[in-house]
Image (cartoon, rainbow, N blue to C red; front, side, top):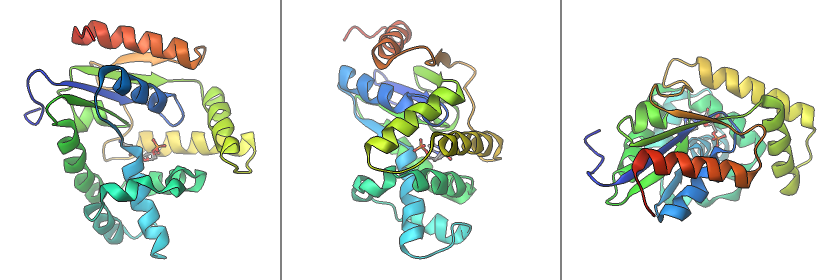
Length: 218
Ligand code: C5P
């Protein structure tokens, strides 16, 4: 991709909800000293803007306007991490104008001098198709539900494991079947299944893959 500079290390990480991609992205970014963008936050922020304005999540024009008006400061709101916002983000993310507005945002971020680590659903396929390193992180839905449940309960939310598993299945279905930039591994992505791996083991595997693909010595 033309926006990516020679010599910059761009690491594109995709995968379904709660696959462990966010944790891996953060750790890889820290390891390589690169900026990190959790692109799910952008879609969550668009959804939150609609909720705060009392606008229906199905209002595509309002969603597109919220995406165009997005600011970096808005990404720090702790409400973005709530369960309901994941669901709401999944709805607004199917609107092509929302995706188009957020695309340039993400590509600008990826085009920095050093490179960047971005995680999401379409980083390797749409946002950074020219990235040197692409990872597609998966895990069994039951394991992803356990992880997300632990995380939400740890943050004080009251929710059952069954409800989370249902969310995850519904979100997988919606994210994979939408017409605009569906959740999909790029043909040149390396797949990593973290079902049987703890956070340390998953990071060690991911780091080995990145080092091999990028020739990075850091
Ligand atoms: O990753 P996270 O769970 O925060 O993403 C919330 C929702 O945002 C996803 O279910 C997906 O619908 C959408 N999303 C997307 N493309 C991305 C990142 C997130 O469509 N690159």
